[in-house]
Image (cartoon, rainbow, N blue to C red; front, top):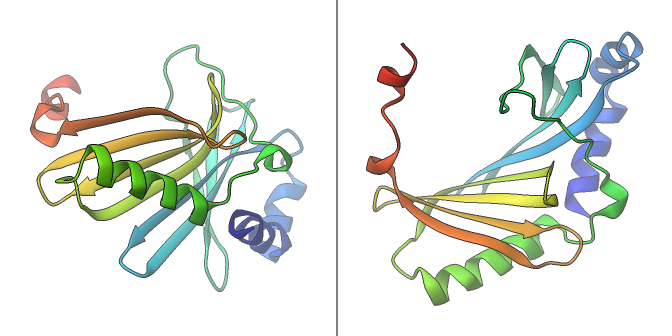
Length: 169
């Protein structure tokens, strides 16, 4: 499985081993990939429940550590560990399911970039796939990583997102 290969690259790296030695409570919280044409940029994220920070690793040669940062989550929300052993759906198959649904239900929403995050949300372990489209919208689908069921599919115009500059004041 492609996701397992990417995680293995991180866990086998000296950068990860040195970092993990001092972090006994951290756990894998997500695998992230940005797909731009034929290029795939992977990251693995690990959550520290004590600090409520996430440390990410860019999966390249060599593996690079991104310093810890506060975890993006709702207040009082729990971050769940990602259990790779329960993932039956690999990324290529997931992307094929998403592309098929997009062609049938959202034919105008052609992706210019694809973001896929394998994560454990309250609904279970899902691929959270977002198409950033040329028509200034995002198509988001959540696919159950065990059953292959598409749990959610929504198309949102980018112009409908709240103005983050005003909301951050």
